[in-house]
Amino acid sequence: MNSQPDVLVVGGGATGTGIARDLALRGVDVTLVERDGLSAGASGRSHGLLHSGARYAESDAEGAHECLEENRILGEIAGECVRETRGLFVQVSADDPAYFEEKRTACEELGIPVEVVDGETARDAVPGLADEVERAMWVPDGVVVPSRLVAANAADARDNGAQILPHAPVTSMTVDDGRITAVSLGGDVEDAIEPTYVVNATGAHAGQIAAMTGVSVEMRPTRGVMISVGYDGLEPVLNRCRDPADGDIIVPHDDEAVLGTTSVRVDDPDAYETADWEVEKTVSECATVLPAVADAEHVRTWWGVRPLYEAEEAARGGRGISRGFHVLDHAAGSGERSDEPRHASEPRSDAVENFVSIVGGKLTTYRAMAEATADLVCDRLGVDRECTTADAELPGASDPAILDEFVREFDGQGPTDADLVGGDRPT
Image: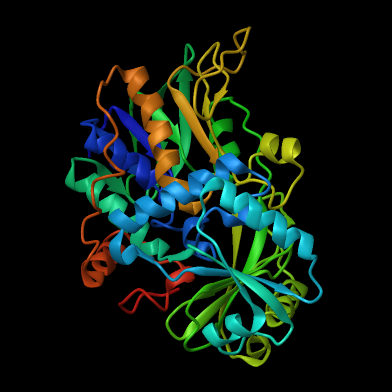
């Protein structure tokens, strides 16, 4: 093991592996560590929706445009890590037609392709759609196979010189004179390394990792349930066209459909209660759109925890408004950064010069999040090389067997896509 890498990336989800890949392609010496195998957190426990931007079009134009662009990029570079299924936003009789019109107008203004159809046409396209569906809107949503996506990013990072340590939890960090000088690792490693720079890409755990350095990062994690039911032949993603609420997304798999989700705040992303009402309400609400799911066999049920940033949620008012991301530069005199740096007027008492956290965001925008973070890190390290991840195809992208071997190599199977990823790994 290289004990003195240029950069240590903490967190083995989509964003962390995306950062490791981006930096490695720029020639930076990177080590990535994860505690429980890749995709152990939000990435591997999501509903796997590849956003077109339509969900956020009327509430967050910038975030919606970002989703549209990243959706297009992933369609070009990710191969069998994604599925271009299309999506259908449906309005049932109980829904406000003004919301449908607002979303359609916002999508059109942003350049998100839409096609409005009446209820009968929608039912012809999607057998089993509820009789109460009055009209619907086609958008370019899709499906992510997150275990493959994360593992492919890790494989590309490794192939370009990075170390990937999927069972190496961070146990402590040593800060001396405003810099991280050592990071202690447990698990399979049980050693300390001395990176020049540290990236905190741990999602809902970002506050806990930051606290090891004396830095405060306030997160607002929320749990959500997903239920995969037996359902053969569903083609598009189905979205209920209303203000975001419980049970408004159905994501197609081969012979299953993933129903989601709820949003309940939790104090600890590792130890939280779950409730039967979440399952019952999610199934009931999804059945409003696709009635047969009410009686479908429950194949597996899991909860994920969203890595929401407290400042973002407080500013925007809560669920569904935005899933923007923030690159938090913890150096003295620096404020948070999402696109361009903003500098605080006074140095902060908790400043750590060689430390950055990436928080918030969505699985769909992981690559853009990684690029923004890598740009900052390269600037701090004096590395003058551009990002190439939007153009370089992921390794094995066209071959599911190769991608699934990467998943096994990095212990990266999550419950979201356990039915799609080959092999006999536990979920």
